[in-house]
Image 1 (cartoon, helix red, strand yellow):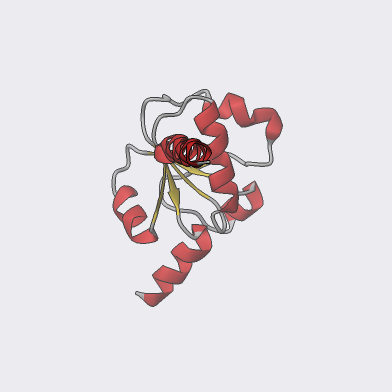
Image 2: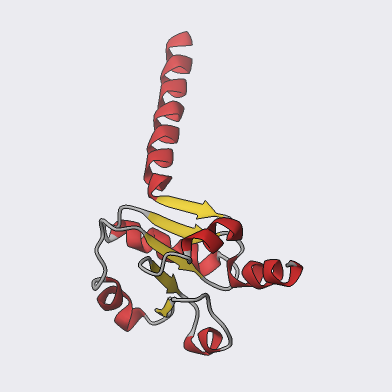
Length: 128
């Protein structure tokens, strides 16, 4: 019986390690950190909201690549260097984390996602 418990524990530990390694490429960070990131105008900053949402307001220097535009999704991201960090955000963080998962599968090595999305960004700006 102990043998099976040891095997089960080993399997669970192995699964946890593989899951944590998979997510090391995606860093979910605060809006405070994003404020520092956007000061560097050379970063690749992508707003994954719809064009209509983007036109209502966006982070400085962001380009818009609509998460829902499946036809152009891969083509748009193929223009970026997969070895360079890429910074994502959406309205609340839902679409950007889904985008990050797709980008990991495409081979992007370092992805940053803004926690809380643009709604949190504007909420934090209102506090200042």
